[in-house]
Amino acid sequence: GENVEQHPSTLSVQEGDSAVIKCTYSDSASNYFPWYKQELGKRPQLIIDIRSNVGEKKDQRIAVTLNKTAKHFSLHITETQPEDSAVYFCAASIGGYSTLTFGKGTMLLVSP
Amino acid sequence: GAVVSQHPSRVICKSGTSVKIECRSLDFQATTMFWYRQFPKKSLMLMATSNEGSKATYEQGVEKDKFLINHASLTLSTLTVTSAHPEDSSFYICSAREGLRDEAFFGQGTRLTVV
Image (cartoon, rainbow over all chains, first blue to last red; front, side):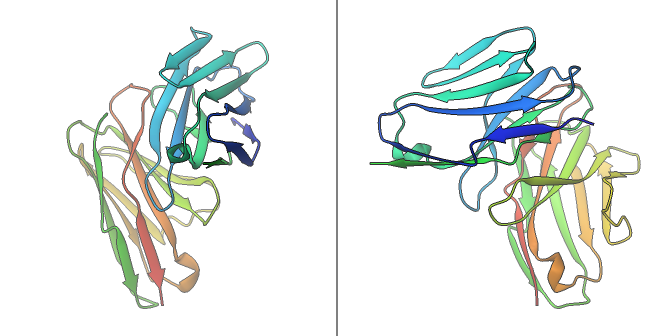
């Protein structure tokens, strides 16, 4: 089955800096790659996703890149703010009825 | 995004009793629902996948007789933790998908404490 590796497990940045979280996947059939943000004790919130037919997608300060050949995708957050502090999960799926396989998560800490 | 509502948000029960957790899709038809368990500072562990009207598919190592899942309608799935024990204490969270759409949306989770 699919295996998703996520790095780093913890990332500390200063407010205003950029943050990058990287994930790799194993199943070349995977074609849907969402990113979720989970604040302590709350539900994971879908913040951005990308499908295998594009290489990059942006939404304000957040961007995701996908390299299908290398089977890795990354989340980029620019101009980080303290409210960006949370655990971020990447995931991969074949889409449709298939399950999402999650990475282990990255705890992002943004210091004022 | 779509709204998924999960209840209760917190429950404390005595060892040996059963607890039912509900997961509802409020503004879409959830053809597929997923149940996860999350330990502190850990990732989401998939327990089972259910499709409306059919039996749930459980992940390896998850006891189907202990964690009963019922997806009786396109808007409701329930997880019943039977004969709960302290080791079942955890954060349980559901997510739902509509049809063949890729996006999955999460409920707010249930903090179960078994005493």
